[in-house]
Image (cartoon, rainbow, N blue to C red):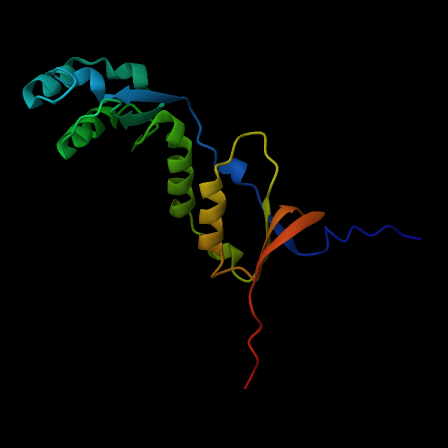
Amino acid sequence: MELVNRVAGSGLVTIDLEEFYPEGEVVAFDLKKYLFMELILKEKDFREALNNLDWEQYRGKNLAVFCSADAIIPMWAYMLVATHAAPYVRDMAQTTPEQFVETAFLKQLNRLDWSAYEGKRLVIKGCSDKPVPPAAYLEITRILQPLALSIMFGEPCSTVPVFKKAKVEAV
């Protein structure tokens, strides 16, 4: 009797979200240290501090820009940080270092063209060595649901059905 690999012949396409894990170290850029009396941000002082900062220390890293103090940060402050950091950093987001990975996943997933998965039976891989945030599973499902014939979670040999496109009857 011949052994048949039914998984290989099933037409399932596996998507491994771990492949979208952000590369590079995530470093914090806390605006708290630029506040006067931990309350307000003085534009002139802030601009001077940013101009004097050694931005080279952030080269190739991911910058998580946030403020750990309970202060109102003007929107232009984030814009100034972005202007200075952009030539050096791999990526940046206005978020805590802990939330950066989730933000990076969402940005990456929304940046891609998923049209190649139209009409496919998809398995979103469940096991990974790196921590894939739950938001990534929600977002990939949201993106692929209008395209896919079906979406499952797990491994091709053991899946949990998540979505199946309803058959449309010919009239």
